Image (tube, rainbow, N blue to C red; front, side, top):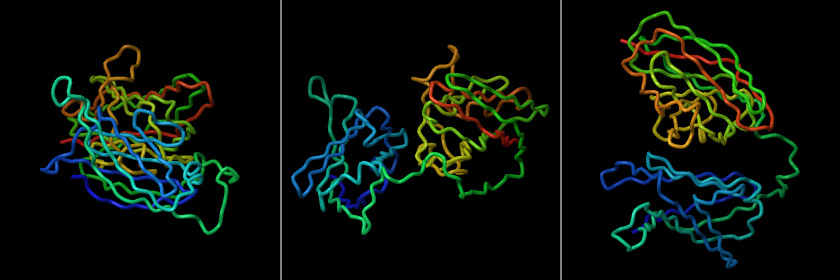
Length: 302
């Protein structure tokens, strides 16, 4: 039986919600190959359908290997809703048939009631003259340093449209790596979904840090910290500036110069820190250019 959960949507505001799907033992279900469907019927009799296989500018539904379903509906869409209440179902479709020719299994995870809230002051979001991608960020997060951490700092990187640029950090110390974190500071790209960001260690395969990832909370001078110590539900698409985030492994679809790419920072565990570490930013779009102010490595060693 599906869980019951009621929630609200406010007119003219960005709506975001995350559902987590686990088995009876609390272990997250890998949802990367599942389809997700959100449907609701309003009190005005209008049916709204959303699918993870048909994301548009009006909404986005994404899944993860850690069992999370992330739903985002932008303000320009919510301001057009006119209902007061609606009943909804959230369902997933398995990538496998229950048995041959039986069809794909559909599971209803959650159902309930949506309450729609109108704003006291009516404002057309299209009349607001601001760029949500390029606001100054005022948030900051302090990372707790470990006694065995060593930090190395790199330089700025600037890319033009449809181009690549890189910077190198040379490490002379021969540490055995427990884990690494990669910081990208002053990230100023309006369209991060156009980028591939790759870290090339001295001896291991290049690591795909970001492959055409959206950043919902993107701001001017956004700070990225990719870390294996990030909370399981934190990724670039839902993080705030300076938060630790996990890598979304897209090595099955994102390529770079026919190299074998790794989708995890853990791939350098047990290797030596000594040598040249290269950060490469590739912009695959003809629209605009961007830059990062600096980047760095934190290496935790024995």
